[in-house]
Amino acid sequence: MVDSHQPLKKFSWRCPSNIAIVKYWGKKGNQIPCNASLSMSLTHSFSEVTLELFDKKSKEDVELNYFFEGKKNPLFEDRLRKYLKEQKADFPFVKDQAVTIHSHNSFPHSAGIASSASAFGALALSLSEAALTYFTKEKDFLQNASRLARLGSGSACRSVYPRFALWGKIKNVPASSDQFAIPVTTIHNNFKNLQDAILIIDNKPKKVSSTVGHSLMKNHPFAKKRFAQANDRASRLLQILANGDLQEFISITESEALTLHAMMLTSDNYYILMKPGTLLAIEKIMSFRRETQIPVCFTLDAGPNVHVLYPESDKKAVNEFLNSNFKKGIKEILFDKLGNGPQKLKC
Ligand code: DP6
Image 1 (cartoon, rainbow, N blue to C red):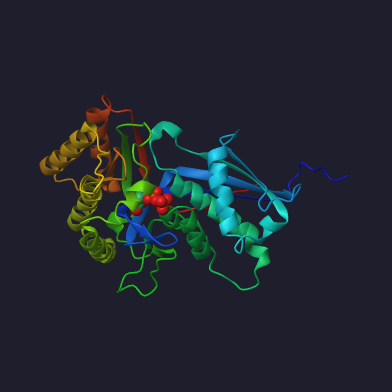
Image 2 (cartoon, protein in one colour):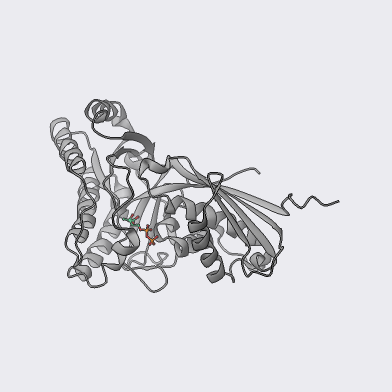
C-alpha cells in the first residue's frame, strides 16, 4: 500500500541573504529593475526550503501548503500561490501535483533582516530543480533559478550565486541582464573574505515596505540621474572588486547607502527609515576609520540597521571596536561574512 503522507518527490535548498553595495531602488514592468545593482552574498544569514510533491487531491490550479518555521503562513502562501500561477510555464508539475513547502530562516524573525531575498532564492532553486525533468532543452540552472527568484523578489535573483552578483543590463558587460543576475568572478584578495557585522538598531516591522519605496521612484524628481549614477557605479564597482581598491570601495559603498535613503527623504511622499541609532553608528564608524586608517565602512538596506563591512585582516580590531561600542544601546550584532552561495541539501 502506498503511504499517502510520503511525498512522491522532495527537494531542499539553503540560500543565503545578500546585501547590495550598489542598490536596486525602482522597478518597472514585470520586476525589471530601473538600474543595475551589485551585492555580496552572506554566509550565516540564510533560508532553507523543503519542497514536497504529492498526488493532487483537488481540482485547484495550484494546490499549495506553505509552512514557515513549522506554522501555516496564509499571507505568504497566497503570495506564493499567485507566483506559481503566474509562472506555471516554468513549473509544469504544479498542474498535476500538490505542493507542500516548509521554510525557515537561520536568523531570528525579529532581527530586522530582509528575508525575501534568501526565501525566494531557496524557493526558486527548489522549484527549478523539481521542474528539471520536464524540460529537454538544457538551461543554465543557476541563471534560470535567478530569473525565477527575481520574479518573486528582485533582490533574490542575486542570492543564487556565491560571493558577488550583478543584476541589470549595463553597457560594458555584455552578459549582464535585467532578467537575471550574473556572478562576478574577478575578485581581488582584499574582498575575498569581506566581513559583514550587522548592527540591529531596531527590529520592528518597517513603516514603509520596499514595494512602496520602489513605486515612489516612478515620479521621483531625481530618478533619471539616480538610475544613471547607479549604472555607472555598478561598472566602477566591478573594476574595484577586480583591482582591490579599498578606498574607492568605501566611497561607493557609503554613498550608495546614503543615496538610497536620500531617495526616500526626497520622494513626494517622503519618509525616514533611519533611526537616531543609525546615525550614531555611522558617525562612530567614520571616526573609527579616520583614527585607525582601518578600511571599514557601512551600508544600509531599506531600514535602520547598519551593515559594517571590513576585510578579514582587520577582523580582530573591528570586532573589538564593535563589541565595546555597540554592546549597549542596540538590539544585537550579527557577525556575518561573504558567502559561497546556495547549497543543495540532502532530504
Ligand atoms: C533596498 O528586492 O525587497 O534592499 O523586488 O519588491 O521584492 P521587491 O524588492 P526588494 O528590494 C530590495 C531593495 C534594497 C536594495 C537591494 O537589495 O538592492
